[in-house]
Amino acid sequence: MIHPISFCFPEEKIINSIPQKTKVLSSLIPGNMSTYIYNNESDYYNEYRQSLFAMTTKKAGWDCMRHYEIMANGCIPYFPNIEACPPMTMALLPKDLLIQGNALYKKYKDANINEIDLSECNELINKYLEYVRNHLTTAKMAKYILNKANLTPSRILYLSKDVYPDYLRCTVLHGFKSLYGSECHDYPKIPHIYKTNTINYSSLYGKGITYTNLLDSNTHNDVLDATVERDIQNKYYDIVIYGSYHRGMPYYDLVSKTYDANKIILICGEDENGCDYKHKNFADRGHSVFVRELHF
Image 1: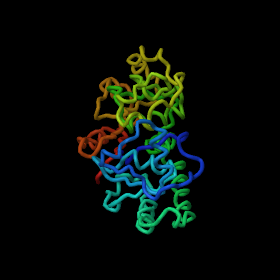
Image 2 (image 1 turned 180 degrees about the horizontal axis):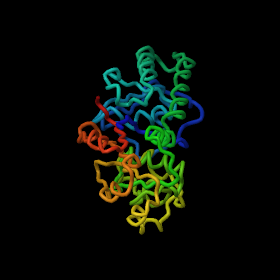
Image 3 (image 1 turned 90 degrees about the vertical axis):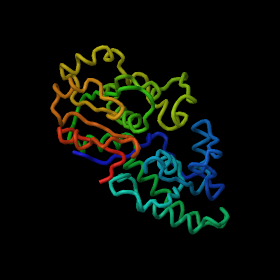
Image 4 (image 1 turned 45 degrees about the horizontal axis):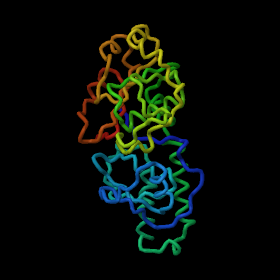
């Protein structure tokens, strides 16, 4: 009942063709705050699009949105020490392709961009793009969750304790919304994933890049906000998903009394140092639990 899960990426943001490269390595270096100069998504993505390679690393956890942003923008990740990643962490990522990317970087790191065999690099970039489209989009991740939980719902209730940004909660919600529209009801409403001109990006984690301003407002039925408790009691929804069980599980007592245990899904998107490792407790109750930093 415990399954690995990884961050995921909105399909509409994946590039369709490999951009022209102007430099070997991106100047954006993880951990070097002086290189964090981009204040909007367009400029940030363009940095990766014009770079052949970009460094990414383990931070508070192994999984990082940067890995996906690099691959989806037609750039080769250089991921030192990827071989040390636990097998069940980032289990859905193409670790073999990441290792190939490391080898290519070591081959070309001292070369001028004009001296590099771009056909060799582009072949690998296309493999990344194909893999992201086939396995790592938000919609593919939502389908993965339902497949592992062996569920085929028509209506979904997606519960959160608060609306503060959480990469995994937000991107997986986008995936379910992409598949189900308003038949997947997020409560409380996660405002920053809906399209609007009023998002204060400076107040959001990561400046809102990648996970905000994605969904049409009509994919949220505001009327259902007022009837959540009654709808749980009446089993209006087929399944209930907690987008981040660490950050709160509203109505859990009611949900667990009303729904069969296998109709309740829990998602853990915490970094390894923020996880309380209660996965087995919930799995023993019969819930499907999806864990981002899974170390067993």
